[in-house]
Image (cartoon, rainbow, N blue to C red; front, top):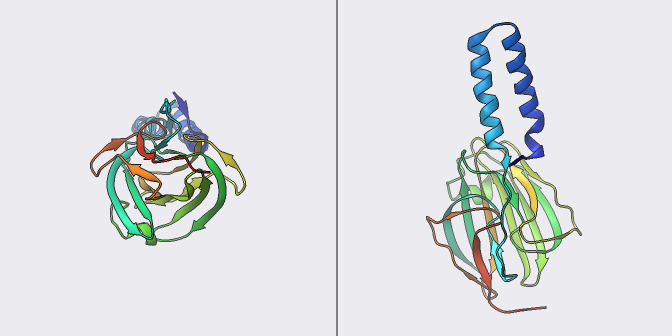
Length: 207
């Protein structure tokens, strides 16, 4: 088990406070800040994941529960995953290809399970050109998540399951796929793991 680099500064800060309060023998504060420090270690955990064996697999971009599978028209199917406070929040690339753009959009911080957060909340929209054409992956902030972090750059070649960022403290992730090229195999209520759970299968090989 490793720790996501995005959480190291915060963890070290709270660890320093814990040690400092302990040296001052301020035991109630030591215990309180110590509990927060342990939670941060837990929240920013970054476990190793085993990718599916088939190259046709499109994997979950985040840990959590599938809350929507929606046909949006215009040959787009959207899969939405809700990440609770207890889920791993390291995000992964759903399907390999080349990054077209990374579009940060400021917005609100409504609870991530609400449908309107798809458009209204702060988010990163990552477009990737791949063997199934262009698809989109969204990192969306929630009521507690106040920062969406994406490390991908336009022009970068990425692989399926590659770590690509993190959303801090509760949020959602969405994948918008061409419905004529993929078969979605998850349904609302399914629990998925980033980089490991197959959420859709490529129907046919394309250029």
